[in-house]
Every structure is written in C-alpha cells, then in structure tokens.
Length: 258
Ligand SMILES: Nc1ncnc2c1ncn2[C@@H]1O[C@H](COP(=O)(O)OP(=O)(O)OP(=O)(O)O)[C@@H](O)[C@H]1O
Ligand SMILES: [Mg+2]
Image 1 (cartoon, protein in one colour):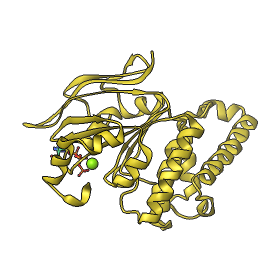
Image 2 (cartoon, rainbow, N blue to C red):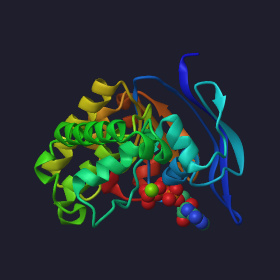
Image 3 (cartoon, protein in one colour):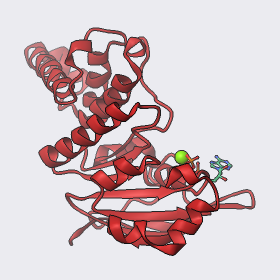
Image 4 (cartoon, helix red, strand yellow):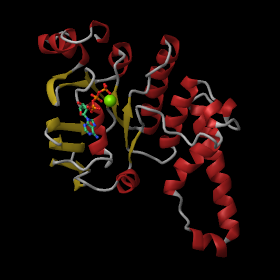
C-alpha cells in the first residue's frame, strides 16, 4: 500500500460548531505536505484528531493500513505519529538534553523491572540514549544549549528543541503545528533548511501547518487549503497559490497571510 496515512471524512463537532467536516487526505511516505488556511479554519483540530488528542466525531484514520481512529495519544505516538504544539510544550525546568531523552524513552527497549536485574544493560542503554539525544541536538544545531534549562533557551531554539524531542522517538510521521510561529525571518529560513534536512535524513512524512507562506512554499510538495472546516483546494504549491478560491479565502480575512 503506497499511502502511509489515509484519512477519510474526518469530522469534529464541538457542541453545534463543526470545526472540521469531511476532511479526507492521503499522505504518501517521504513527502512534505502543507496544511494552510486562515485563523480558525480547523487546522489544529485536524492535528488534534490525527494525534489522538481529540476523538473524531466521525470518519476514519488508517496508518499503514491499520485503523487507528480514536486511539489514545500515547498509542498513536508509539506507532510513530508524533506532533508538536502551536504553543510550545517543553519540560521547562529540565535541560534541553533531558527533554530529548524523555522523548527518546518512549521507545526504550528495556522496562524498569529488567533494569533492576540487568544494570549493565541499563547503563549501556542510558549512555546510548544520552549520546543519541546529543546527536539529535546537533542535527538541530542547538547542541550548545544541551545543559541549559529548556525555558532559558532563545525562542527559536525552544521551537527546534520541540522538534528534536519528537524526532528522538523515531517517528514515521511528523505533524508540525506552526513551527515557525514567533520566529524572525532569518530563523524561519534556517528552520526550512533544517526541516528539509531532517525529512531527508530520516525519510519522514511531514504534515506542516504554517501561516508563513515563504516557509510553506519553500518546503511543501503538496498543499491542502482549509476554510471553515473544509478542504477548499489542494495541489502543488504554484497551483494552490493561484487558485481563486484560495485567494478569496485569504483576502476575505487578512491580507498579510497570503
Ligand atoms: N476544544 C474546543 N472546543 C470548542 N471549540 C473549539 C475547540 N478547539 C477548537 N475550537 C474551534 O474550532 C474552530 C477551529 O479551530 P482550530 O484551532 O482548529 O483552527 P486553526 O485553523 O488551527 O486556527 P489558527 O490558525 O488560529 O491556529 C475554531 O472556531 C475554534 O474556536
Ligand atoms: Mg491552530
């Protein structure tokens, strides 16, 4: 089966408000997809459903041919679908390195009981974990902050740390909710380069929500556009950018988003 993620008619009702209706997409392996749309279009709600944070009102999600609709977030994460949050969620008081180790531990190959009886293996794995967490920080270019408290890092570095943390859990699919939010233009350019690099390095499928059109156009091979809970256009970046429905949806709200 060529699709890694197949989403059919995903719908979310919040007490009378249809935040998302009939959202259907097919994501192939090793591709970067964009999910764009004006404020309140339903983008984050889609990611909340795909990551298990919200149970869909109706519709289905298949990952690698397996029905994962409505599974708990930890179950979905273990399968390899990892997400970042629009508002950063780091362990603020832990160091940058510890944040990545916590992410990696989701896939550790020992359990706590085994660790008591086989300390040598435990120590080896701890060391390996630390080394691979450090390597992850290096890939993201934030290794200088390894020992610093997460909340003391510059904002752009915190955003990168969030990506490093989910990468450490060996994802197949990354769902990124506005990773460039709050970054200055130079940081955004760097982020694009970095996301492209990690996508190629780890052969990931990425679904990226982003308002910064430079980031979207620079990264995504295929774009879905949402307005009021529905997909109104989809296609390659140049096609979507010139689609009258897309222009109307954006110009109807804020011009700066286009
Ligand atoms: N938990 C919730 N309960 C009730 N309504 C919600 C909830 N979450 C989102 N909504 C509503 O659903 C709609 C879609 O919101 P969502 O956060 O998915 O939009 P978005 O496209 O991510 O917007 P933004 O670009 O501002 O992040 C909005 O009208 C929002 O107010
Ligand atoms: Mg959102």
